[in-house]
Length: 252
Image 1 (tube, rainbow, N blue to C red):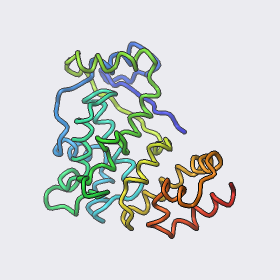
Image 2 (image 1 turned 30 degrees about the horizontal axis):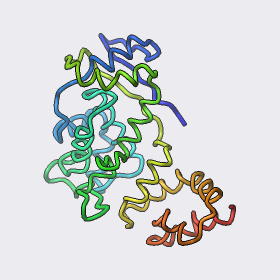
Image 3 (image 1 turned 60 degrees about the vertical axis):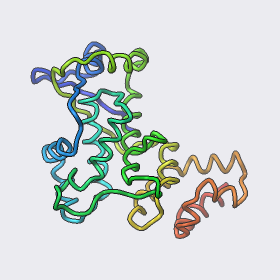
């Protein structure tokens, strides 16, 4: 899997994150108290994601490629304003903005990007779920933090909370392909409402968790009841069985 590459842009020059003092500057000084709201997200998308806006305005939804770019842009904005460890409320606010109509197309735009995964949910939780601390934003952030040194990880939270220093530059984050954490993808599968609109994301999650499903079957030797309890989408979306379930069971 490709690794995140973090670059700092100060005084017009890019400094590689191999320099510990430069990374220290990012984690302590480049944290803004500016709010992350719908208007901010819309403005950032206009600058960095014109193709995302065009896709959304044309179809009322996002293709897989546009969704990945949208998440990349949102995470970059979170890191620039809130650091590598944004608070849960910051991630929730970003997720709400991403799922709102105004976040991409304005008040007269196409329908919302909300996905209802249950009556108790608001519809933004596929981007970030504050209860389970999962979602596409969290996947990106966790992958990015893997590149930090151990001492930077340990001191990050304290410095974010105690150093309200105004930012001296901007941060640009070169994101990799979609995160491959099987635990995060399993959460997406279980919490996402089974419907045609969510099918592409569910299929992607099935692909990402294929190896972990095989290992789980080999270790547990589950009954069919136990298998379907662990992977409920095979029950309410039976057309996935031929593509994912039968091959997995037959090989193991």
